[in-house]
Image (cartoon, rainbow, N blue to C red; front, side, top):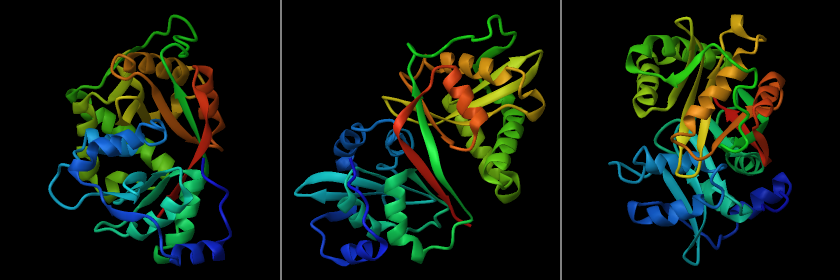
Length: 300
């Protein structure tokens, strides 16, 4: 576990000291070592593992988005550098060392990860970044496996859970954009409509978008945002406002999670601590809380 963080001035002094860590980009030859390190906490670190396994992060042309902190040849922490700045480490000193790699070729839009690690990282790099537009200070992390999932909690639900298909793209795009606007406070179709459509299309083509349909209407959607061999992280959960508080979300998510277990051995997610209806839904169908929280810092 990470040690207790020190005060801000002490952090700055510690960061200025010579470090025992060698910080360098992670290359394709490091892939087995990186995956082994990420597998020690598969739910927490699924984003970076997914970037390696599904997005070719270490085999694509161009600079590596991953940096590692090595101590005597042992990988003690990783940092994903890009629009999402994501740390993965249990070592405070490794996190401090990785802070030196936090700048990148692309503007950072979000810092996200285990809450204590993000707080430490931001205490070191925050002065060189714009002031956050919002900080989600505490986000609960939940996970469920097939044995714990409560299936069809209402009994005889009329809808059908299925994978989204290419003909569903426009309907899924509408639900996805509405979810993002409600959750993040900005409309992705206004900022980057082509890029957002490509993202939706990619998730559908990977078999990572699940929908719940009843009487020809999509009543629910959820995405697998990232996945490893150990878990898949659910994102983009959405029920249209007019269907909420009628049990649709509970039945639909249970059915979609059940279907997702055909491809993934475990499902995980994180949720804002103030989103009590979502927390209640997840717990109602068997999700259990992990012993740590996430934090998300959203930049302009």
